[in-house]
Length: 235
Image (cartoon, rainbow, N blue to C red; front, side, top):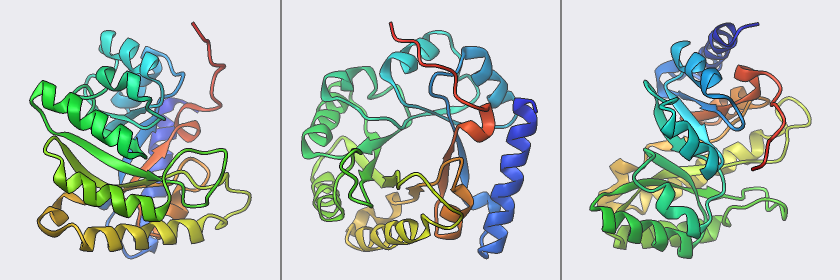
């Protein structure tokens, strides 16, 4: 199948999952996870109707931006972000999904201040407590959300999670449900900033229908759009 056919199929599945959950398909944003994809593959996905591209690595983000590969789509940074690479990302993407520490949050705020902008962010939560994954604990997410309100150059727009690899249909629904409740709990405490909390980023190729059923507003889909991921070529 072509990328166009894959995108059409994913959109159909998103719509079906949303309707089954009593939601409007328009509530869910499709983000194409473009890790190790070529400029041409990214352009093809955008031409097929993908509204958002999510990049995992700063090096690839910079290269694709230089090639103008993301033209016609919004760009998000969805991978782990080291503080020493914040300068290469802040102000160049619409949304950073992976803020998981006070150090990183303050670094993003500081760089955004230098640029005279407000950077939109999500807090990444390690909802399953996996030692092999990044992300903060739910309690740390509450603390970071409170801190974000005191910082002038970041805007907290929601939460992101990468639960365990789904071993069976429905296996991750409990984690998605916990994320939805955490999202609601944090939003309730955001005071005047409640209206900024609009994004719950969760669900990937193997489990995005379940994530939608539990309240996801953005799903990050790679393999289901591009096919099996090509090998990663390191510089």
